[in-house]
Amino acid sequence: MAEKAAAMELKVFSWEGTDKKGQRVKGEAKATNEAMVKMDLRRQGINPLKVSRKAKSRASGKKITAKDIAIFSRQLATMMSSGVPIVQAFEIIGRGHENPSMRDLVLTVKSDVEAGGTMADAMRKHPLYFDNLTCNLIHAGEQAGILENLLDKIATYKEKSESIKSKIKKAMFYPTAVVIVSFIITAILLIFVIPQFESMFSGMGADLPALTKLVVSASEVFQAWWWAIFGGVGVLGWGFVQLKRRSQAFADALDRLSLKVPVIGAILVKAAIARFARTLSTMFAAGVPLVEAMDSVAGAVGNVVYATAVYRMRDQVATGQSLTSSMMEATLFPNMVVQMVAIGEEAGSLDGMLGKVADFYEQEVDDAVDGLSSLLEPLIMAFLGVVVGGLVIAMYLPIFKMGSAMM
Image (cartoon, rainbow, N blue to C red; front, side, top):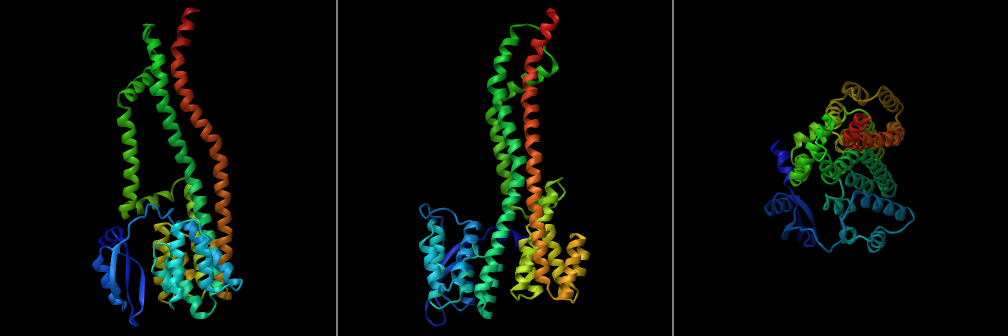
């Protein structure tokens, strides 16, 4: 837990120094303080000359997103496959980017490569944007002389990964939107509309129905304490987000709970399997050893339940156990997936089989999200109808009651 807490406090530092050859080098590093950065640089044989905390630039442009990195990967893969030299490709992509932050990142990497460093080492200086999987594949491609092929695999992987993320966000958006819209509509009715009826009822002197009394009482509470209610909801939302970011135990509990939510849980399971298969297929096809590849796979599955299982599988594979048997012991993978992996291991085409599994489950996620959207649209209308209709009925019940008494 201490290690996880420390990881949450890491800051980004920019540094400049000289390497063993006396050449000037620069980059970024994540650490808790400047002393840790300097210590790590000296361990790498770099003499640090300047280390400073990197602040967010107000005028530097938009934040660099995972989508920006995915697009950059595809552009670089396309240019290199067309015969454009790597330094020139970085120059073209960097100068042509609309986001100044992304432009600075690409040109910084280009400068390091131009100075004689490897592309993998240049990218490792920016861990916030280039993960271990990307850097490891780039390193493998440079060592084997197949950088163009691996850049294409990285670009495909990034595109598929971002597609899965967007579908998961889409699946989670609808329930959240329903709750927020329902709360806002209810608050508006209770604060501005119900008081108009309340003043009319007070002049009648008649006994109000129980539902009407309940709504009127709720309206009085909202009118008197609206600032506390809205503030409380805001604080709860903010606190939930901060707790999820800062407490690994809370985030892990949410991951476990999310897999048990009806409909949503099934989508998250399929997405985790798709990520597992896509990442392992990409790493294995690049020639990365299976045990080493499992570390990247664990970080890519997106759920602590599957990440823990992958780490356990890695340890089992390292002792000589087959991937198929370790997957069977995990009990998290459908029989079809296990059988396809078994066939891939026997035939020596594990990367191809995993690619087919990834394609299948990515399509499953797509279909499930579309189905959820079609299911939720009428449910949203029905839910809002019940909320708004219930308030309207509560206000008209006394009028109906008086009309029936007069008759």
